[in-house]
Every structure is written in C-alpha cells, then in structure tokens.
Image (cartoon, rainbow, N blue to C red; front, top):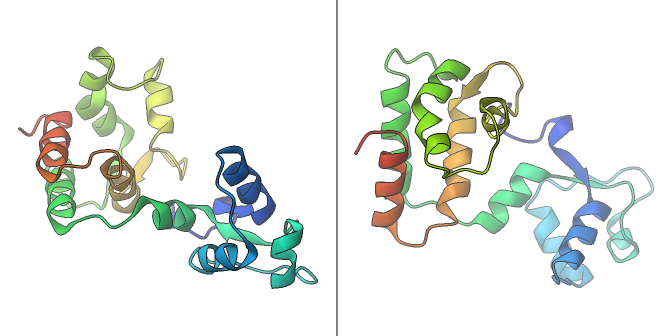
Length: 168
C-alpha cells in the first residue's frame, strides 16, 4: 500500500452517502462537506460542491482517510505497543513483514477462533491491501489502529495486542 489516496483507495461519494444512510446516518450538505473535506475530497469536472445534495455521482474521497476520520485518535501508549510489536516481528528493520511472518505470528488466533476467517489465505486478506506478499509498516499500524477503535480501555488494548502476537 501507499498509505492512502491511491486510485484503488478512492470511492465515489455517492456510495459513501448510500452506506451512511443504510446505517441510519443522515448528514446534511454542510455536514457532508466537513467530513468529505477531511477525506481528500476530489471533485470531478462538472460535479462541484453543490452536488453533495444531489448524491455526487462523480466525486470521490479517500476511503482510508474516511475510516481514519471516524476511527478517532490513537493514543501514544497504544501507538507505542503497536510499534514494539512491529519491531519484534521485523528485527532486521526491513520495513515490511512477509506473509510467512504474519501467518506464523498470527496463527494462534485461527486456532482460538478469535478471528472470523476460514483459511490462512482469508487471514492474509485482512493485511494484503497492496497484494505484494508483504505487509508494510503503515499497513500493520493501520490494521491495529482499526482494532484500537474497538477496545475502549488502554490497558486492555495493550494487553490484547501483546497477547495476540505472543509478546505478553
């Protein structure tokens, strides 16, 4: 992955509005402008901000920035534990993790039924945004930032991540 904003990471605003509505989130035009401006909003020719009210069929936003916007801030303590795990998994400092490292380190989750996947290949799909048989540090951090939003207590999150990777 490239850290967000790539062509594959862009989604039509109309799809985002539809999904928000499906979950009962209805935002007016001003609210949509605020959210979308934080998410690398790009107008296509002839679409313009006025089309926010019309469904925006051509304009796009960066999906990873949209998710980050709603995910919230990750505390320094949580970032530190994620960094510690990453350094343990990448002791040579290569800057990426190969699939075999992820599978070996993460496989206990499969045996414990702690993730909902049917195979190692499905598990790798959780990581392989770039589809290059590696997980970049950025991808690793983003995955854990997403996990972070699901666990309210800092100590519980830190213990979970350390345990997940066998570093407790």
